[in-house]
Image 1: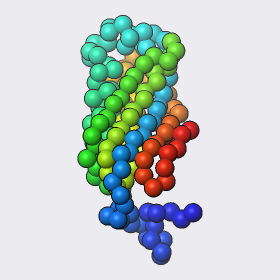
Image 2: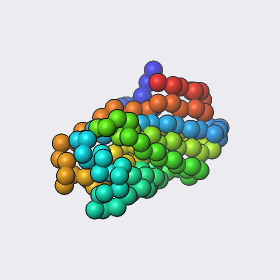
Image 3: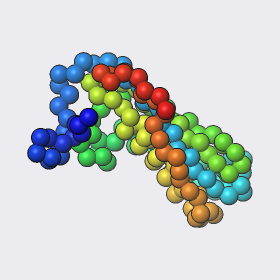
Length: 155
């Protein structure tokens, strides 16, 4: 298997997708952020002075998915048809973030879903760092992708 972002001389390049068929493509990614129980309780109970932390992180994740090509070199700018970012308390110390990106196009949306989950987690960190600097973002990963020439994949 060869790396598609390198030409025959090893130089970086943007992959030419002009000959690819447009198909419905979906990618789902997740991230977790671990924090002190009192930090998560403050968020869930709506006691954070900055307001609805989950709502802000959700919007940040959506915006990040739309800006992925500005952040990741060689990513194609995409016309996303849907971006969903869900946040939930997975335990008393952990928030699970799930990002789903969808489009009909010639290239996949894995990077957009991963970026959305990552930036949502970073936003949670930013909003809560004054009360909990020890938060840890972990397990950022692709859960599944559908569509395209390579077909479906699931973790």
